[in-house]
Amino acid sequence: MKEDMLVSLDKIQKSYTLGQKPVHVLSGVNLDVAKGDFISIMGTSGSGKTTLLHIVGTLLQPDNGTYQLDGREIGSLSDRERSWIRAHWIGYVFQTFDLITEQDVWHNVAMPYLYRGETKAEVGRQVDAAIDVVGLSERRHHRPAELSGGEMQRVAIARALSIAPKLILADEPTGNLDDDNSKEILNLLRRLNDGGATIILVTHDQHVAGMTNRILTMKNGRLAS
Amino acid sequence: MLRLLRLVQVAYTSLISHKLRSLLSILGIVCGVMAVMVMISTGEGAKQKVMSTLAGLGLSNIYIHQAKQPDDQATVLSGNQVYGLTWNDIQRLEKQPFIAGVAGMKEISQAPFGMNKDITAKVVYVSSSYLEITGRILSKGRFLLPEDSYQNNLVCVLGVTISRQLGAAGRLGEYVRLGDQLYKIVGILEDTKRVDTEVEEIARENVDEMVFLSFPFSAMHRDDPLKSSLSADLNQIVVKVTGDTDVIVASEVIDRLLYLSHHEVHDYSMVVPRQLLNQSMKTQAVFNLFLAVTGGISLFVGGVGIMNIMLANVSERKREIGIRRAVGATKWDIVLQFLTESVLLTITGGLLGMVLGGAAVILIEQIAGWPVSVTLLSIALPFVLAVFAGIFFGIYPAVQAAHLEPIQALKSL
Ligand SMILES: Nc1ncnc2c1ncn2[C@@H]1O[C@H](COP(=O)(O)OP(=O)(O)OP(=O)(O)O)[C@@H](O)[C@H]1O
Ligand SMILES: [Mg+2]
Image (cartoon, rainbow over all chains, first blue to last red; front, side):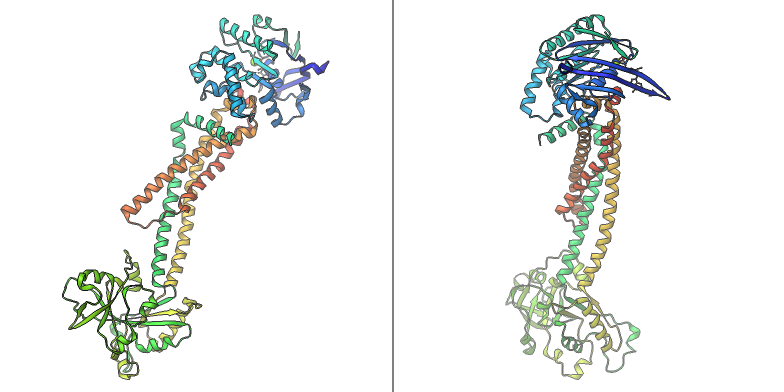
């Protein structure tokens, strides 16, 4: 059963110490996401959604519990190995469109390849294709400052999908966008999911969540359907 | 290789977006490299000048000059004593096994020279061995021979300046007037090409402006007891020691020998080019140390400037670091990125310093007239030091950047 799961979290705990007092953000999260699934996570602000996504994205280590990504035990990996996993398997889309302002669209999208050690010709094709998917071919030599919020978020998605990741993590990708732009981004994610990508989406928006296969809610440090 | 290229490209993009700041941060390195380059070039130039000057005098030679006679000592000398250098000294020296050759020289004080009053020549009697011992080179004709002296031949050898000043009358085979005698020109010395006066100061002569005559036979007549006890015979004796002799030790032996035979009167002084060279090498070593310290300090200060700017860069770009880590950069990738930036800064500073340093060196040579010598060392060393400073002072900020937790880095805005 578990073999088909891309993401498998078991009793994940995470707490931060603020001053002397520990704040338990995640207190035993269980989550299984099958390959090709598209799920959304909702919850009030500060409930720990981003924290969970960081753990799934191997950017943060849980205090307790086990995390398996495609059958691999993440907790036992070195920093270097986790970096490799991020560069090859995971596409991140952040809440705030995280682009590097000094570099143009093309180089922002190509950034993961910098850390994969692949040859230029391949990279060029993949990057061009990814920019094409989000419909920004015309703007590839523009700097982020010259783009609208929606366009920046599309660049961030292009960066995530350019490496053809096993897993796409999107942390409120539409949080800062108007309805039309939100719809466009969501359609884009839908198409990627149709193409086989597994997606975990964090959102506040009931309507957005409704377009995914499954809605989970963060509450009291646990996930519930 | 491709990886390095990309690293450089990324570093370049981020540096170029802060042009003014990057430029200001490398000023220290620019000045440091410039200073080191100028110092090495001028130091090397001065060293080479001294070297060639002293080598020109012959490093196995000892120059013995007659000292000026103090007025009060004239009375102390007893009857058969002569103040200064004599033929007896030459005879005594020639007997020493460690001496390969000896040549004497005597200035002729009043010798109205030629028809041209503008030409000032120093006319001297010299031994025929003078040319070989001092290593001077003849450009035309022959030097004075022993038989010129025995036969009282009226022949002379000219320094190149004199020959030139005389024009057509200064060629081989022409005659020049000295006092009331005519002397046939049998040889002309090669141009010593020394623009400076250091050689002359040390050896107290400028060969280019000299006219050489053979000692008259009577002056050399060593058996004549009267002759040797008259006035001082010689102004200068040049000694060449044998190849395997330590010239400095030899000079001490000769000093002792002369001192005793001159009845413990120091009526001579000695110049040992080898000794001067050793001294100047010691001075050079001190100068080099000074140079290393100064250069080190200026590059250190420059490096601290780089470190400062890189630390600011890191804290300003935490978010970028977080993004890069999130898309797969390892800690090492981050270290490399920031290290590349600081090295790129110092290389730029180094190149700029090299260009400005080169210009400064040329200016110094042209305007101040100092001798300079631009060697590979004077170019490469400051550059290598600059790059080293870039790595050394870039490591700490780079490691700091790498140790940021990706999440912490992402959260900072
Ligand atoms: N580094 C940290 N140190 C201390 N507390 C932290 C840290 N990071 C997060 N927290 C706390 O953990 C809790 C969960 O944060 P998280 O960012 O996961 O919430 P979220 O569900 O994503 O909220 P939002 O919907 O506002 O994005 C919050 O109370 C937050 O203050
Ligand atoms: Mg959040």
